[in-house]
Length: 594
Image (cartoon, rainbow, N blue to C red):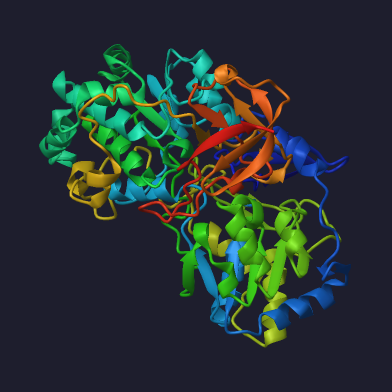
């Protein structure tokens, strides 16, 4: 038997035991995060999805040598870009940065995923540390806030057993149906929920004065800021009442509380401020640096590491990349033609690229547009290191099988260094050791150098500073213009026939990787029948979908999962106000019968 780790984009980063005879996979029961089970993405869909097996130039299959010569010729330009996806989370993905630095190429900044939330956390805490699962296990109450854990974080479920569960989500998710309390709020109101809860904590004198005096002394200004928000009007806007707020507070008051916050709360232009508001609520309750308490989002998995692939290249925002400004674009392990917001714009941009190079595992909309296609190796076929944004454990990814298909990121970079006559590239073993040698050890397990058993127990940021509440940013245009105070309830307002667009992940895919869909999920009272074909449109574009009825939705929402063909014809090509993040849900859509 051999051991490795799953490289798919997920909180869990499962440890895998492979029986070489028959290539049978099972989870490692002894790993602190695993429970011996593996998800269907790894056990089923990854191997059912056909791979690209041969390199291509202009649609014609060629040898790898010929294809890499063509890649080298394409990069003989002063204007090139590397756009990297996140289908594989091994650190060796980043080695191609070293080649881009040599040719003075351009990389991307920001995120399609969690950049806004990360920025909001940094505003308050200074750095984004991971909350260990061991602390989740010690909590009394867990608030699952915009995170569909049974789909995106299934291995956390054993850590939630025996806890009071509160769910805050526009959708009645599987865990919401089992929760002690579910607030089914209007989308894009999570900020207001956090502000209102903090205000009520202050009003009933449930705040942790002792903790705040030491670690967050500006709390009185934050309380004043919460008082600027009118209770009645804002609760009506959120879609809850005073009783709902009181019931939530019953689970927070004098308890060990963990907030599990997902990407759903920050897929908006204001996403950073939502995370900052949630953190400010947590600080009011004194939840940082204590046993069984804290806020868990997608942590900065590279925190504490010296990254050997961190280079000084020019960068452009990933979520709104203007591809047409570059003569050569390398798309590595991604599918911008379908996964970026505003597909109409993105496809026109990609069509204008003279040399579009695709380097990845699977055929997709981008590979079909590419001039040069280079097949990659999957994570069972190469050496790598796996970090996690969901826990502190770092894992060596061992090569399990040999394959004649594709090349690794290291070999791709090594060949280009050779063809250009560049020096300075170290061995693959050197880079893997560069990551692992920075880790601590707990028994046989590698541990992130940034790990703290009780994060922020000594203070915030690199220098153990104070927590900064969101009120300290109240003069920014965001808080004065982006967030209305809602001083009056809207009466006699015409009904908005549009739906909020929600774009969660599917259990059968990682965004556009693996199984694809064509469904729009609508609430039953929307007036459509299951199986009916409809056109869904926004100011950015439109696409046709098949209706699937979902009684777990609010009447003002619809779901089109991120693996659905055409969903991003509806989404806006804008950046979040902080964090340079995509804003997939900053849109309302209309539905029409065909």
